[in-house]
Image (cartoon, rainbow, N blue to C red; front, side, top):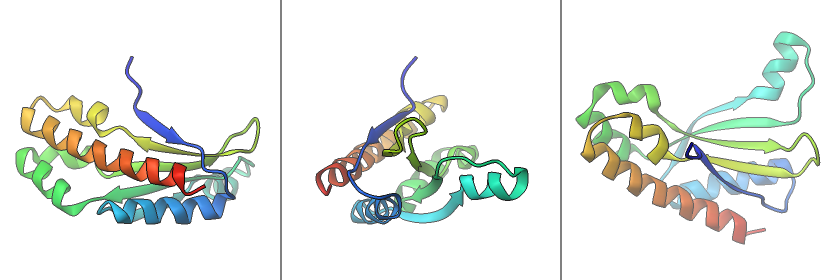
Length: 134
């Protein structure tokens, strides 16, 4: 089974990793359109303590518009989620980037696959920049 993510392990604190990730994505043309604090939500709704875990919804509008032009249902697979999390075992911060080629591969349209490859390249550049900034 192909992986749905590729990751970086920046050597920094959690909040710094969120900021660095946001900046690395911005440099590649992505904006953060959603920010979900999963650990805080689980604590508030269920009283459960979990390691820090945030889902950043990254969107590059030009790519999103092109993909939506080919298939209006594709919005169910957007945005590109990027997870900043603390590893439960060792507390190390990990950043997981959604692999759009895996996710958008669900759409049977070559044009969408081409867009997914372009977006994947941009996300990998953000990942690489994040890994180098540590």
